[in-house]
Amino acid sequence: KEYLEKAIESHRNALEILQKNKLITKGDMTYYNLALALSNLGEMISGENGIKLLKESIMMLEKSLELNKKEEFPAKWASIQNAFGGAFFYLSSETKDEDLLLKSIDKFQDALTVFDCSKFPRNWADTHYNIGLALSYRGISINSSKSMDYFDEAILNFKDALSVYEGQKDTNTYNIILEMTSKAYSNWGVALT
Image (cartoon, rainbow, N blue to C red):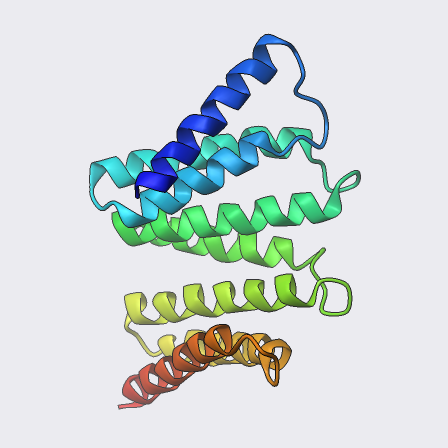
């Protein structure tokens, strides 16, 4: 937590200097870096303080998006979409707002318009993992006959993510995705009963 607070302070200071000297240009990722630190800290802190940080993260991502258009900076644009997805996901978890959860899924899917498996395999896999996670939570939260559809889709996304990490040295990531796949299957089984 302490390191994230220091990172936020550093990014704020950098932004202040860049703004003061009119040095923020197209392609700049300072707002994005601040947004990630805010989102990570917001995820760690529950309640109103966490919500406030997540909302500020979304505002910083909006500013970053203004500087990083898809046509000019596709990979940066996709990273910003992925970060939006994460911020909306954690904000929805905290506020129980289903619309934010659906928005997170949309943002993750937007990132996949750039992150394809051949050019960006890890980004592609991580984004599919994020989609799978959000779809699993959606399936749990609606708790209806439609839940199975969300679990099915989550499992497919987890399998896509696993396909990239399978056989690589990063066994920790592989095991995390495998665990979430197992939970999605388990939730799917519960939804059948």
